[in-house]
Amino acid sequence: MSAHRHFQLRELARLSARLDELLSACCVGELSPEAADEIAATAGEIMLLLADHGGDELVRGALDDARHLREVARTLYPVRERLTQAGAALSRDVERIIREEKRAA
Image 1 (cartoon, rainbow, N blue to C red):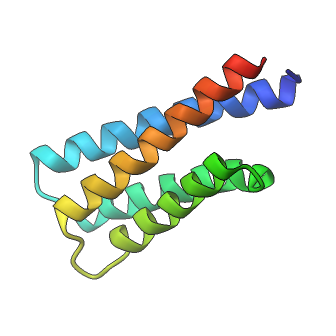
Image 2 (cartoon, rainbow, N blue to C red; image 1 turned 90 degrees about the vertical axis):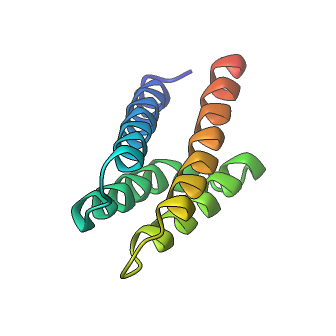
């Protein structure tokens, strides 16, 4: 595995952890517009990291989930349940990608 690829996996893991933190926080307190924006921005960062690897079926699924999460978060009044479901789907996909990449290394 190249150093660049390893760095991307570390960054992907960091963003996934950040997304999990944001989703956990929004489940406890009120869902502020700032929190929804931060969730959408984190999903966007994940999309950027995965964009170079869009040919893989698992990555395409994660990209679709990230787009969906951004759409849900960017609505005028995001629904907490839809946001957490979309975020959980993306988190699962990212974790699978990380596992697969580590296994392939």
